[in-house]
Image (cartoon, rainbow, N blue to C red; front, top):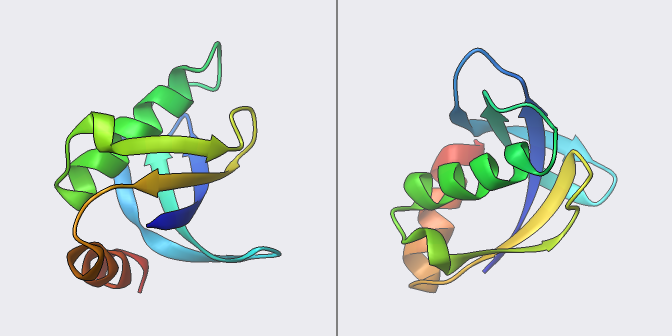
Length: 91
């Protein structure tokens, strides 16, 4: 399942949840404590998304947006479970 993300690096704590209505469509908000330096925030985002969806970190792949606040990831797993989790987190 492909998911749009809106990243907030440098947050006081890591959290996954909320909705951001961007130009590409609704995105899941991911706040991470890591700074956007040398890919640290992106790594933290992938780990946070894996934890939020209850999948292994290797099941989350960055598709685009390595240096952007707007990212697209692919999460591998049961499609219906992932969709339910996404709806719960985003809304």
